[in-house]
Amino acid sequence: MRANYRLQRLFVPEALAPRAALDASAEQSHYLSNVLRMGEGAELLVFNGRDGEFLARIVARGRKGVRLEVAELTRPQPDAATLLYCFAPLKRERLDYLVQKAVEMGAGRLQPVITQHTQMGKINSERLRANIVEAAEQCGVLAIPELEEARRLDAMLAEWEPGRRLIFCDEACGTDNPMAILESIRESRLGLLVGPEGGFSEAERKMLKRLPFVTAIPLGPRILRADTAAVAALALIQATVGDW
Image (cartoon, rainbow, N blue to C red; front, side, top):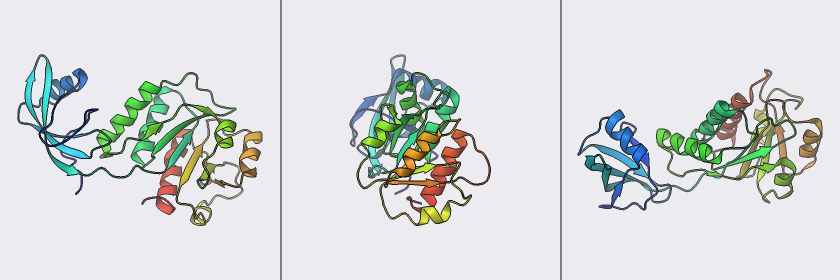
């Protein structure tokens, strides 16, 4: 079964099963009623990241909000994606974009990483989670990626999961072609590390290259912004050793 992208998709926290009733949140109710102008009997898709995707219908609409009734299953819940996306946080709007694109491109977990050149202050985890859900709603994603707490680069590397290969984008890789490097990777569990606008420091680059589970790749002959580099790297990985 494939997603019906003509229907509005809505993330809900409640358990889902046929004939279950649930109330949309105030924000969702406003959007359904006043923005989309959906009335009683209108159909949409609901998912919670656990039970799969279901067709649902609006059975009541009023000042107290929108009430939904769950109908049949449209897609079963898939396994969560295994790709771990590690990124140095950027400024607000570009960080929103980066997180949304990571969800669209198939990241299963998102790990903010503090590097020597990271310029971002406090991370608004609630805002990032909202961006994750919004991207999942818009792009047919059912397994909601997890957002981890921010960690320093050295601490993350010290506790790296055995058996997972970490690919990091190195602007000083020595070659412009990443394809042969990626195609030589044999691990099925992967992590991707994209640095901040200023790139990795020389000390960080040396630390990464000394680790046996780390592979450095270039992203072509041009200098890319960090958010552009993230999308380019995710596309390369998914097309060569990922789930494409």
